[in-house]
Amino acid sequence: MNASTHVAPNMGDLYSLLYIMFAALSALYLAKNTEYKFITFILIFWLLAQPVIQAFYVIRPTFLPFDFQPNRILLIFLVGILLFKSIIVKRNLSPIQRQSTPFVVYLILFIVLIAIAMGVNANVLGLKRIFAIPLEPITFLLLFIVARILITENILRAVLYAILIMSTVSALIAIYQVIADPMFLRTGTPRLAFGNIYRAFGVFPTEYIFGSFQLIAIFVALAVISNQLIRNITIAILSVSVFITFHRLDLIILTVLAFLYMTKFSRKKVGVPMIILLGLVAVSILPAYSIFKSFEGESQLVAERLSADTVSGRFEQYWVVINALPKHPLGLGSYEHPEYQSLMIKHKMTQSIKKPDGTNQVEGLGVHNGFLGVGIKYGFLAMIIFILFFWKMFQYFYRRANRFEPLTYVPMFAVIIWIMSNISNGIINFSSYNILIVGLLAGAFVGLYEKGLLNKKDKVNDTSVCS
Image (cartoon, rainbow, N blue to C red; front, side):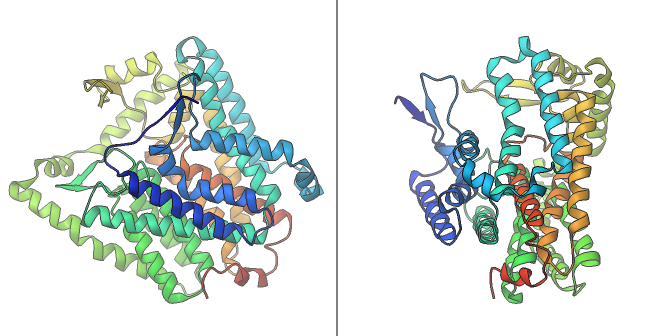
């Protein structure tokens, strides 16, 4: 097969290959004691290796109109499970599982509305985008269904281990990127934060994806690590990694959720949130020093960023999109639509993008709000359905969250993180790694609830990662 593999110049082949080998070996180890070893291995290998494979090892056959990204391979794999493992599916599908979970109905409606938006704008978007965009939430849905049907306590334990491994390794890499080599294992375009300090991504392509995943991992650690010292060290490392993304929204989310956990779910009330707070104060010394140096004239970039009023600009952006929504009731399908680009360029809400030939091109910004992003892309009704989908999913897991069964608040916090991320960012791409993790966890916990595996308090201690 004649194919090409993309390799970025800022990461050595050796490091990326070593990472892939580490992911494969970890997946083999975690899957060995599960009921469906091969399926679990593939899911965990995807969980551990997806960002690196996506950045450096995507196969692009010259004779096909599409490439083999890890998420597309995951989609094919999930379809294969549902088609060729029908005996397993039938055996594990209880009568209650044949009933639709409330939020799944809204997700299916959302997918239908995306398909309608694609059809309405087919003459502008192009054939590839028309098929690719609806496949993203379909992948999310299939991952949810497979996890829901096949989940067992052993598989859940393996998945939670994998999340902790991925987040801890990525956190250590992120810290190394800040203190030593900003390009080490970097899979995305570097972005300056303060002075000569780059935002840390770990092995992820952006600070948004990295931060969201680390936030989820913090609550996984809280739920499954029983050894207090190991739990506190892990949470401190993960909290530091969130801070060095220098992404303000993630820091706000961390603060809000730490308070929520402390007041509603923590039996000790103070311990872990205080660890988080101390960790954030400790690492604040580095950016504080950079800010101080910037005022001495060493970094005009930092001074400009500190003085910039980004909040007002975003509210102006919101009003521009809100005023445009009635003109496009079925949506424009994509931010690349000429009408959307014209709208944003007209209001000077743009960014400069470097093209493959080295020249710069001005493009309209995507709206920094996930709900408005859905509205302008897929229509006002899709935005309402998207909000209801979030509400029903949050409601489902919130009602089942129990202080005495710590695992039960993991999916609830994962959903809250996704919801809050959409307030000032557009985290609506269902192919995004952090969103698919939510789908995996949601499906797993729905399956556990339906099978009655989280209704006994003595089950909680069995899922502890460390003792």
